[in-house]
Image 1 (cartoon, rainbow, N blue to C red):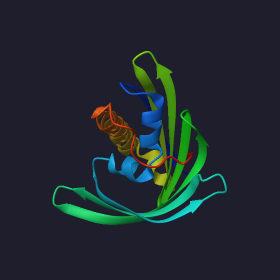
Image 2 (cartoon, one colour):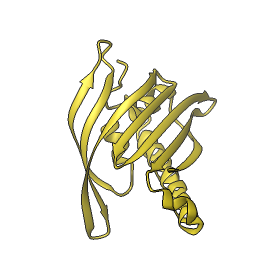
Image 3 (cartoon, helix red, strand yellow):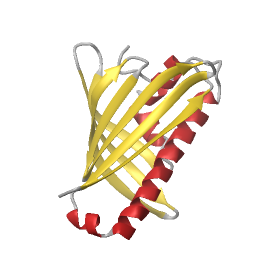
Image 4 (cartoon, rainbow, N blue to C red):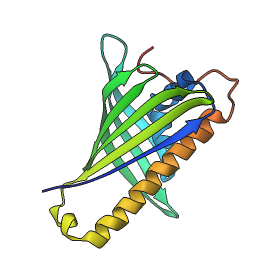
Length: 168
C-alpha cells in the first residue's frame, strides 16, 4: 500500500487568464515559485509536433536555512488545454501530480492548484500523527506556491506575459 496526500486550493489573481497560464506553463518559473527551491536547471526538453513541451529533465537546489540539497527529476506535461488546464507529473522518488485549472472571473483569473504526492512507504498509513503533520505541511506548500504565483503574475500587470507556453 502507498500513501497519497492531496491538497487543493484556489486563489483569485488580478490578471487575465492568458498571463496566468503563461506563468504556470513555464516549468522553470513555476518550480522557482516553490519557496524552498533556490535554483532550477532544465537540462532536457521533449517537444511534440504541435510545439508543446511534453517532458522535462531537471535539477533543483533545495535549501532550508543554511542547508541545501540537489534533487534530480523528470516532469511530464500530461495535459495542456490552452488558458484552461495544465497537469504535470513529477518523478523524483516521490510521485507528484500537480493540476492547475484556470477560470476567468470578473477580477481576472481564479487559479485552482491541486497537488497529490504519493509515497511508496506503507508504514505512513499506520502513523496517523506523521500523516497529519505531512498533510499540514503539504497544505502549507500549496498555499505558498499559490501566493508566489499571484505575487509574480500581479507584479507588473501591464507588461506582456513572460516565459514560454507549452501551446504557442
